[in-house]
Image (tube, rainbow, N blue to C red; front, side, top):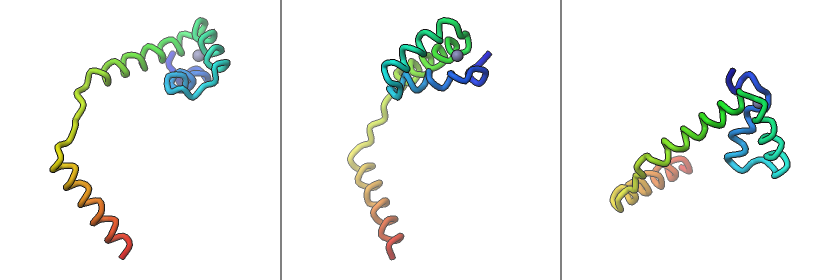
Amino acid sequence: MNVRNCKEGWKEEAARDGRLTPLERHRQDLHREICGSCRTERTRLEVIAGVLRRLPVYVPGPFVVSATRRRLLESASRMLD
Ligand SMILES: [Zn+2]
């Protein structure tokens, strides 16, 4: 069973994103206790979040920021011409 097998499955991601009200979140917590699909989805999302937290964060140097800004401004200027 996967998230597609439960009409409440989308709420697992919504809860993580803070898109549920406290009541909706509570109801999903209760639902998850009886729904293997939603438990699996919750675990899947936790695994993905854990992997993403361990990824290095790319911080561009000032030259890259400057060059990117210049290209964006040039592109926007061409769109206005
Ligand atoms: Zn479910």
